[in-house]
Length: 304
Image (cartoon, rainbow, N blue to C red; front, side, top):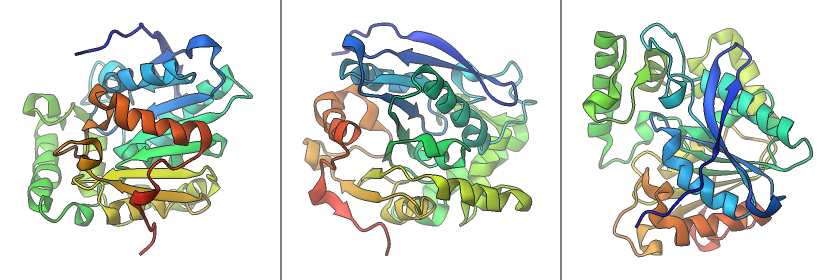
């Protein structure tokens, strides 16, 4: 049964290059004080998918912010073919602006990030990411194809690294919605995904790579990295590869099983569905409120 949700306040957040992002602010109930949580979406997933989790956090005393990256959902431009947006700008421009918005609202409040998939990796691209107090990531990686689950690798490579760039070349953007493969994506975003190499910084011009690595190194927020045993993208090698960039952060990684929540499967995308309100969502509060890992029995080493 779907739960009723109190409407959030629509917000517009202007990035440093003038691009305006559409988002929502979910004010904490009862005065708040627990801090602000910025929720970063997965690639090709609308911010509205996370609205129920944001509402849940507001009920628990957090301010929560959801937003669509440039080129996606409510932040989609009139002409997706000509926008020129790139995936890396979701971190260097978009997340940076949203974090600044959150800090401006509550200059002395704690700042937390919940990042799903690429949304758990891109915070390190922002110049102000050192403001973050704590991060919870879910299946966070940057889609380096050899890290995909072995049993699904061939199909994933065919879809995202062969067909996606092909359709992008034909249409001038990736028509994900028409195909039923997530949302439409700007060409720059789709092609960065398709052709990303072993090192994420290789997606950036050579002259920018040292700065990108320095930004990641400047983040000192503790990270709890969660993935599922049946996550085809967020495998143990993929999680380790992404966490290695946050070399100044203390990172804890856990690999949960669907059976932990009496389910047969969960995968990469479903943990933010409201069926997990009484289970996974409730468990995340231990980390967001107190920095306590609620799954110590599922921990794995962050380095090989």
